[in-house]
Image 1 (tube, helix red, strand yellow):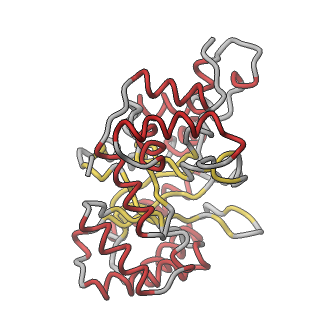
Image 2: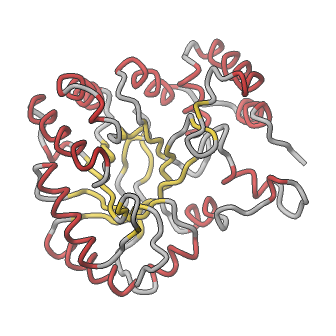
Length: 306
């Protein structure tokens, strides 16, 4: 399995991570098979959030790990907090500490390898976040810290008080959701793609050694659907299938390889609970698209090169 840098920590993590948001939708046996297969393939990174399945996804994962007889120290477990579904975002010290304790209990572990703040809280007081992070670090409950869906200035606001490095940032990215790269290539133009939607987060993360984690890599829009095999993306799918045939992999693998080809060294979050599809996703680490192939896919998705 291909490895990428984990922020500026000097540690390497697999380029593919198992996203556990849908773990509640499968049986315990299916979850265990997925976890066991992931570990066999060198994918020992598991992404959670306190709200996934109302917390049940973390609990199911813990039971699956126990069923497989896996060792905690062999896994990298990440969780997120800050969303109170349908009500608010909450980065208060009290909420962060309570959320971590809840995740640790459900995951049946003493520590998280990483904790991410899940979507920006506009009422965030960085002093409170800093206090919470200090408590979690001193107690050994969290080893690394990061964010999700944050812009550069939102990260800078946190860094005003937070002393721990911001190691990762989760952003939606894929061939049909490529605004992170499109905005830069269409800069200073009057095109729709020139709109700055994230404050230049891609290059900011590269400059500051923050690992970008690409979530929903097959989706377009905001959960509008999957672009693979969609009639809305006929040209894109034709190009992806053409390249897949060349490398003797599936279209799923090529779609992921497109993300991994970017020199930012992104990590792709796989959200599937289907074992065969997960294995296809892992196949992306075996190929490296050429520069020409990367741009062919980019153009086939409807983007332009000025």
